[in-house]
Image (tube, rainbow, N blue to C red; front, side, top):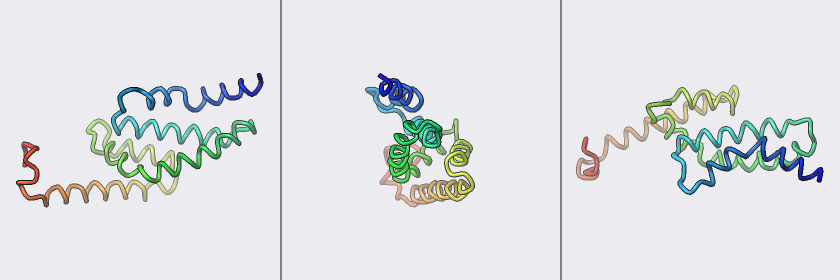
Length: 136
């Protein structure tokens, strides 16, 4: 029974709201997904540093796995957030500060450079390739 109490505590602490969003029938937009993955990372970091050995030992492997995932998709998700007029780069910079600490400006610069590269690539397209968009 004690194990179930610990699992319930861990679930409530880490995954409850995020699990609901990520397992919904419709996929969340990338800007929402970015925020949810960010929240998972923060919660796992807090849990990995927990005084409770059960929570700490269980959280550390999960933290390593989410970090692998984050490293693969961070740039794409951050660009989507930065291009959302409601958030722009301020949200990316804020989240990166919480995740990466002193290394945050370097990660933010990668996102900024990625946006500029996308813009240049878009501008270099011949007009016939982008007929779907009215402004081409």
